[in-house]
Image (cartoon, rainbow, N blue to C red):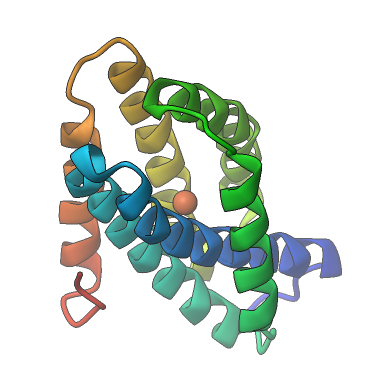
Length: 164
Ligand SMILES: [Fe+2]
């Protein structure tokens, strides 16, 4: 295994943390936007799966994940920050969050050592899929297809991975 930089490890930790927050947040939002709970559950499933993948990458580098309390704290804060935003406002806000991560994960993938490449390709692809989902939903189209494609790919990569 090639030596990696501390910055690279920090990026891995941040991305794993983001997936854990995403999983919890999307699950909490099911009560908030019950008419969209099917989509939110699929998004949570995607985040949990990618989070599991990133956890394995962290373990390979013997790096520690962020503590659960931090995941919960940020999730509660994001949930509160949403205020009384309706579904459309939520989609637009989430897109603002996702856009910089698409670029960030592209860079992380391109800089990754060979042993992390396949996991980071999925990290990159799931963020791109999330952006396509949001763009479709904002235009009142069904964006879920984008998410299902990555979920199917994840099932192939991790046949014993966490489901639902
Ligand atoms: Fe994610």
